[in-house]
Image (cartoon, rainbow over all chains, first blue to last red; front, side):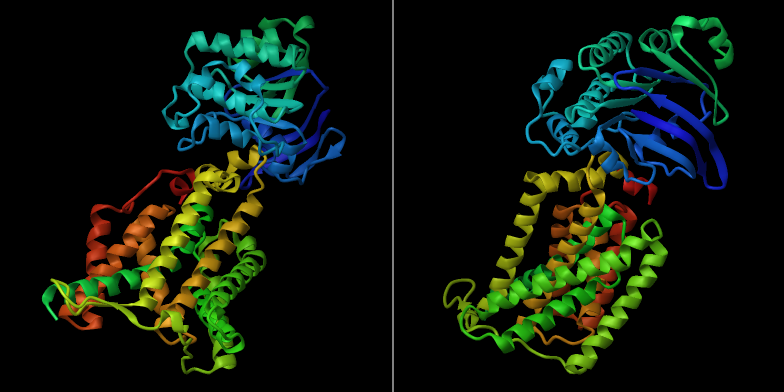
Length: 229
Length: 303
């Protein structure tokens, strides 16, 4: 469903991604591992359309989207939960959710979104900026789900969030994958969780994919070694 | 005529000048707040609106002709703004200095165009008959006060435009998109908001409102090829004092600047009043660089 072929990307004059190949099948859950600064976030931003690809090809649902602006990719069914959550601070929770519908150009917010995170219905008139980190993260995931994407891309969704909410987010992601059959591309430092939800993994180092496989036939300690943790 | 009447009359003049300033500044505030673009040709949109009102008033006659002129000014300046966005501004996003220079060039072209078409001498729009005359007070503390209907009309027009814009931004889906782009352009885009359209619409509506300002101005002063320059400087002051990208702040700033100018002109010459105004603005910015109303946004942080 998503295929990234030989994609490179630059920041100014320095190359930060070097011919990346990566694929995700419908409904599949893939995790992208690697230390800080190896280009994971840049790769996600390049797939979403917020960073230009200097070379290579990105195809989604059979269409070449390498040059498409981000809003068209969102409308084709890519949902994005960025690092730092990207909540609009001066908009209410319900306005943030309504923006999630911009991709689908649909009217009301579907109920299943509030089912994923019941806490949001209670907060719907609060401004996004006053929510706690955990609440913002739940809002960011819910917002990405409003348009019923086929692929959900998450950049460190448990970063800086209290453990009780982390567990809740994990359960919701399992549900999104299992019951809603949405494909997931996850960047996550919290390896146990990434490991338990992934069908396949990729490991990045200095802008390249250096290792890939399935958690079932790989030894986590070897990966720990690659990550240097 | 008592002191109270003189002061009230001058204050009212200040408010009516503030109205035109506000109509001019709204577009600047929007395009700066949302797109981080400074359009040096914004004053010429006012000028174009003024000339369009003049043309309309020469073609159409009758009591409602002036409303037609307003519509024509708005639509004409909106279209011109859209054209400017598509041909120049769009290609220079993220390059503020180049944008300044390019739009300044556009402003010179438009000024010369107006000079070639209409001559260097100003043209006037005769106010419709229903705006002739004034609201006069004959007794009480304000005896002798006289408020021209034309100026009352301008103030009312401005209030209607301001309230409509605020409602549009607060209540509609497009307004929501606009606020989202203002706060976090990338995230809005990643959620499926067509930021190209939002930018184009914001810019074009902003120039359209400046066109309205030109039509309103044509009722009380001659339209010349350089009329935009006179107003755009004050409009920039209004945007800076108001806090970039805030309509309420822009409105308050326009009111303050209009009143200060009108007040100062009671005691001194026009040029000295300008000096006083600039000094006050500089002092104000020293103490409150973010303007009267300020909302933090990503665009601002990068700027």
